[in-house]
Amino acid sequence: MICQPFSLLDKNWQKLFLISFCFVFSVVFLNVFVPFNINLWENDEGIIQFIRLSKFSAIGISALAFSQFVLRTLFKVASFKLVGFIAWVLLEITLMALLLSLIYQNDGDVFWPLFIECLTYASLVIIIPYAMALLIIYVIQSRQKRNTKMALLSETDLIGIPDENNVIKLSIPLGSLLYFESADNYVVVQYVDDTKIKKKLIRNTLKNLERSLNDAVVKRCHRSYIVNLKSIKLIEKVSGKFFIHIKNSEVLIPISANYIPQFKAHIA
Image (cartoon, rainbow, N blue to C red; front, side):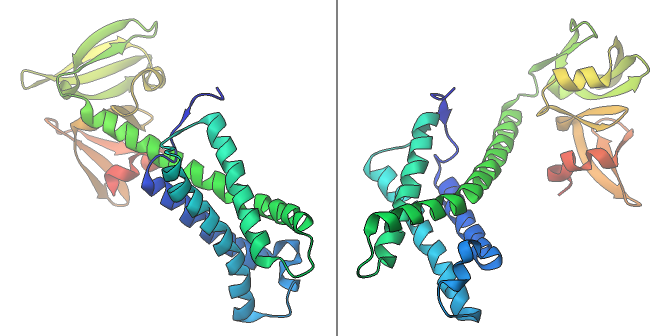
């Protein structure tokens, strides 16, 4: 596991997002929560104090930007393994502490105690926003991959529909599938065959189908319906409720409140 690829910071937009997020977070964190009694280090207040505290963030984040855009280019680090990424983060924190120590070292100060102190502070401040930024990047990247995978699916690609024993009972082109409708212990498969809408009854539940079928292809929208995303003609809001218009069909399929977040990208 520790040697698996780590691709969350391979692209420039991901690096920029990491740097921007960590900077904004650290500025807000230092000025709102003033950890380590940092507000008492100097006799200032108001905008002067805000600038002083934000300066700590700017110095630290400049080290982060240097590592992501300069050092990675210099050492030709296009991507990481997980173990390499962990080591790189430790290097970035060390660079932050080193830069802060060099800038804020006073005459007569012993360097190493100051460096250890800066290393501790930098670690405590940067780890949380760093982890949060990676989580956000991961979510965005996962959605992009899912959308790309769906876009690459051909209308003629077959989708296999299993029964409760996971035995494929019907295989139809993705472009022909309209939606699934619950019918007690059965599922009604609605599909198009030679311009005619047909149905097939399969012993299964929507819950089982939801687990077994690709979420990038079909999506649950109601306790009684799963729709083929490629069969959606439009989504209409009527009296505060959303309804799906299906291609080649007059049926209006409701979207329950619980499932609206899953369709947010389509509604927007």
